[in-house]
Image (cartoon, rainbow, N blue to C red):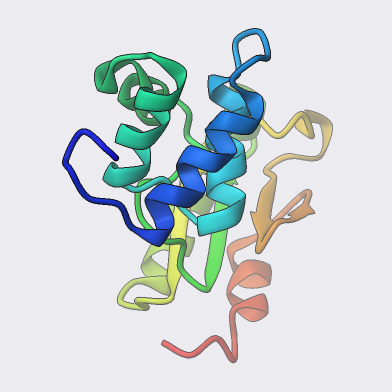
Length: 152
């Protein structure tokens, strides 16, 4: 039984995933990744279940979820473009690239444009990922061409 007095399929899944790692040292981040892989995101209910199972406060779990950019509170869109805004990429036009891509993909509910602060691909900046595929020396035209055909 949860702190709220009810269980759902998602809560049971989060609880079970947390239970599998409960004996590991510092399992929270791995549990969060497991839940996100299983459910696509980490819901409020999952946060409560994980906290309960790992004997942590809801605030502790929420703090970790909100700190890491790769952990999601909402289901992901069909397509994601991530633009590096680290210093090396900024020096070769990442700010302009990010703005152009955001404007070019604006209004598409199934696309998310996010900024990150280093892919470790600094020599080939500006760098982006398009649906997880890393591209160096990226241009807005290349990204927007790749996005053609994405329903918007």
